[in-house]
Amino acid sequence: MATIHLSIVIFMPLAAALVGAFLPSRLARWAVLAGTVGVLAYAVAMIADFDRGAGMHYVTDESWISEVGIRYSLGVDGLSLFLIALTALVWVAATLAAVLREWDQPRLFFFHIALAETAVLGAFCAQDLALFVVFFDLMLVPFYFMIGGWGTGDRVRATTKFVIYTMAGSLLMLAAAVALGVLSTPDGGEISFSLAELERRSVSEGTQHWIVLLFALAFFVKAPLFPLHGWVPETYRSSPIVTIALLSAVLSKVGVYGFLRIVLPVMPEGSQHWQELFIVMAVFSILYGSVLAFSQDNVRLVVAYSSIAQ
Image 1 (tube, rainbow, N blue to C red):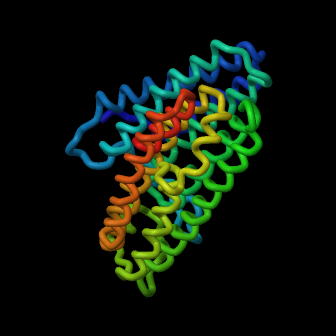
Image 2 (image 1 turned 90 degrees about the horizontal axis):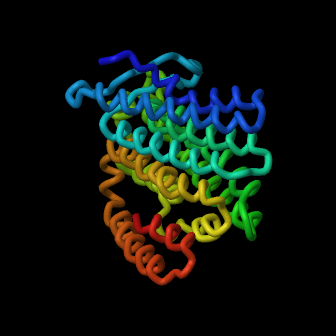
Image 3 (image 1 turned 120 degrees about the horizontal axis):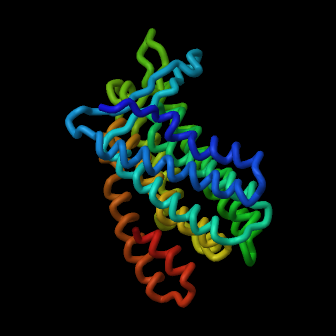
């Protein structure tokens, strides 16, 4: 396998934005676009180099906050590779579309676009639960400013709803992550948030039930699923088109990815306990989102409700 450092892939957009901060505003946008194109080039290289039988690729595993067992652990497998490629492709297209129009405070706007891509890529590459939580929560920051700062209409109300829903989900996930790390630690052992280690450790089935529910609520807000979708219509109605594209095409996939990456492999018994509820929510979201999408005459709301159905 080729030597590909995931840290470079993750932080390239943010580094390009920081360089752009010192350039004239006309050039700053092109610096961020160059960063997104660089990520796409890395994604293509990873796809060409990917060996399906080799397990986790391009692994980085360094001690970060050793006192509480948190590691800077990155890796890519088949599931995350597809989503990294999707992220890279969509961000190039969205950034190019943004480059071709004028913005108030363009350096700041393109900085938030770059920060959002770094956060999403970090979530797809993280192999430590605590690191995943950091990147997952970091996504809130740039989208908060892109909606509130460059949105239209009742953007304050939309931003408030977006923050309340996503912040509540983030707090639930933080509580679930801490509980999982602490309660899975064997007697005399050391706490660990490594996803691979958490899969090997055991948590009682009853404990899994409520931890899975906390994770599910957090991920289903991000997905979004009915009835946790209350932030979606107003957010899509008020956001810039570029932000809508990123929300619909990529950000909603992070919630589903987190469920597949963390909940199912680490807590299979707890997932099975709630599977009927999750199936009902999923099927109802498909029907509810599709019916409402067909009934809208506002293209933004068509995208909003079709995202729920997806």
